[in-house]
Image 1 (spheres, one colour):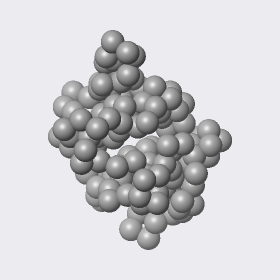
Image 2 (cartoon, helix red, strand yellow; image 1 turned 120 degrees about the vertical axis):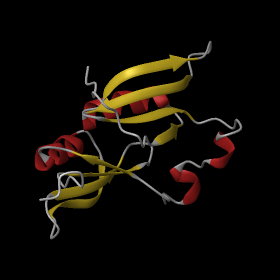
Image 3 (cartoon, rainbow, N blue to C red; image 1 turned 180 degrees about the vertical axis):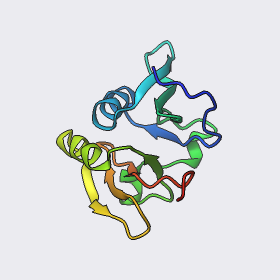
Length: 141
């Protein structure tokens, strides 16, 4: 399991209509690894942690609880997002091909960027927007 000596201090949080399906797909398509998955008595994902390198995303099933009332699913807002996670990947072209083969909906094709590195953007099967790239703002030359 990937564990960073010092973890990220900013961790995106997402809600999915089917968190179990999302977890499986995110691991298969993007290379995340399950760190923890906590379910309630009905088997709904209350909280999950997926890691990639030194980063993490947290997710759970969409629900209309206190915090959940402040969130919308992409299909409720015409697929628009107010934010998306950017994930640094070592081999962006290979990552792009893996995600595409797994059925990611590509919204921005793989391209070399003028500011350095390469990147692409896509949607997962439940409509959430993701951005991946080899540009690492922590290591600017």
